[in-house]
Image 1 (cartoon, rainbow, N blue to C red):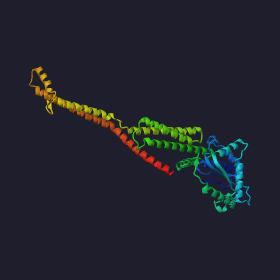
Image 2 (cartoon, helix red, strand yellow):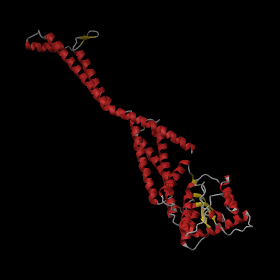
Image 3 (tube, rainbow, N blue to C red):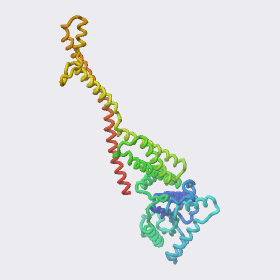
Image 4 (cartoon, rainbow, N blue to C red):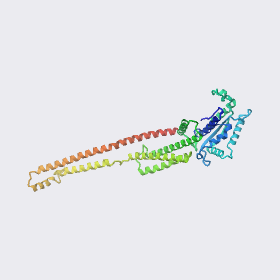
Length: 424
């Protein structure tokens, strides 16, 4: 809860103009950051304040839509029409009558539009009239002492504060019927703090309203993105198994539509161009998250990089079959005297052609040794090939380890965000 008030009178023209600017800005700032809004205006300058408030954007609210905000209080000071003999109940009746007159229709278009915007933005509009706080507070030597304030002013101010902080009048802050969380409220506070830090003077009401619309759009963008992540985590999260790409894409489209619906339902403030800009930012963020989930899911594919193991395995199997065949063909018998093809027959035929049988054993031994050496070289080639494969897949394995670490970090962050959301 925040109260915007000014207990010192404004004597010069520049001071009065500055007071009017602050009053209009206070009303604009209070519209969003509080569950009630209070603005202090001077009783003689209410119409001028209404004219200043007409700077609000026409796109902020329309009468056809439900009222986005809850309550606006006009805290009017320097009211001179109270009688000393009036009771507090009679003064409240005067306040209600004045509020009816204040919001009644006017012929001037600018004032009529301002009243229409106020009525369409807030569910309830009220006012509270305060008399002059006393001449002592207008002196330069005034040090802020409460004793120097007029008793009639303190009486009505106390009554207003009692009404303001009455538990029956305190409700959770809502925008468009949706309760504002502490995280969203923090976004509003940061936005307003940035305006007051950058502005050389008190920000105008129009600037504050634009900042309010921007903060609301930021909150809706973050809320929609968070919903998308939660829905995708159910299918492609850190604890999930591999999902076919087509199924994951279908789930992504459903989650994308749900996130966009969340944004469209809440982003109703500000210019249409600004809303579309934040909507495009949301679409870009979701696209980045989509690629991230696709990469995580691809790392879980059991058939990924199968060629790294299939090719060496086939080579090893072929060499094994060839070695066994060579061993079987180069001996006469194996097992239970089973006759097999003998390399001697080939050698004998060769020797007969040369009419030299003395080289039979030497030639046979030479052939077997050459075959054995050849297979040994092939085995070494296979070993070297496997080493090369391991070196080439080393980077892939390193990337997989990094991906696993990032998945763990994402799961931890998601669990923390879920905990914060539950607390909110």
